[in-house]
Length: 618
Figure (tube, rainbow, N blue to C red):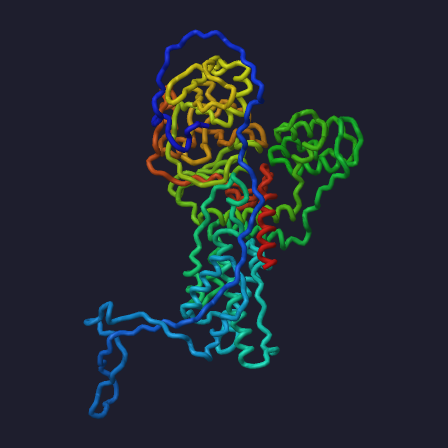
């Protein structure tokens, strides 16, 4: 992780001025104050947008006036005067002065007069679009000939089906007006206009939610950095007025890509399943040592079998087949648990305690349904079309996917940030591959991890071969006063022990995140791979570098073999999505489920609850 990643390539840095190395006597220092810390990004208490009353003022219809010119009437023969003077634009003499857009107040008996009395609330941008439409003479959309139109009923049916698209239909409820209770014609018009305004508000709210998501991810945490998808509500309400197929128009605001369609189909399957997956229940506090008898042992075996990968199940098929439901924690089951602990990145001791039980992540159909809903919401935060060529990193799956419509597509394992140093959720563009990179050590690592060592041994960086510089000038680590957290640059030179391995792939961003090689290859043998400081480590970095540069892997190996630091720009920038989905379709369209390693599903649910409360309480 380069201290300047996201801003400069290594080759663009100010040169480091090499200072003469002077043999210095090692000085041990003591400090009265504890070492400072750099705080990690934080999660917020989600705040939903407030609702306001839609205010329709005086409604004025537009009128276009212009020059009047005689127009020949073609038709039956008329008496002596065979021309009629009608309003028409004389295009030969038309000018800005001759054609004027004006407005006139609507008649007193126009039912739209009662829109001003309607009491409907909406978020500000929905309210503003509605106000502009109706105040400027927009025609009624949902009321026709003094009654609720078929178009309105089609829109209401669409809103009622919102659950099928991963939205909450209770957020878009509109009641039909009970005209039988109206005392007179004025009351009928008032009730119809209340309905007209309410349905417009709910339809636009649906369209906005479908396009950009119900929640603003950037209000959930600092780990989210996503520009919300734009929704032109003024264009949307105009389209509603003109449309003869409002159901198709409204539902068309949902994502149209294959990922969303596959998640939608999975949601329907889960909700339509009559026999739900049996929940696995643990009784009391679970702590089981080898050889003990415990009522939770059958649940342990069942949980491992459900949680395990297909490869794990094949490897331990004999143990699963021989198990008879006994509550004795036998040596065979201890071996099974140890294998599971190793695959999950846990301490391997065969003791079944809280951490092992948590790693089972026992999920039911209800849990899977919520993961699908969360993923459908998150998919609305990204572009509908990922592009013909892109890289997609799914953090909970610990995998990265390279896709090219005109070339090969593949995926590989990755290591992502640990729960303290989480990888962000954002999108950017891949720009550069840097061979034999320096590792510019982020300030957070220098302060939080190295500073205590440097206080005890100021020359520590000199001893391990790290370079320290201040204002572009190379200095000795032992010459730095580490009493506080000095603003110095620290980097590890290229080499076999470099933390970034032999290459890194840059997509400059504000979060110092990139993909890179790693000397710690053993991490890829683990199932749980949230182990880095936030960057994304690749299991096959040479293959990815060759794909993004569009060259053979032999070229990648040749660049590495030079041993020289060498940045190479990609021929054409293309998108990378650093994402977080706990349910996601595989290459065959089957939905796979993943652990919520950062507990972001929980924070998303809190945000959803806050949105529901704000809307239902309005």
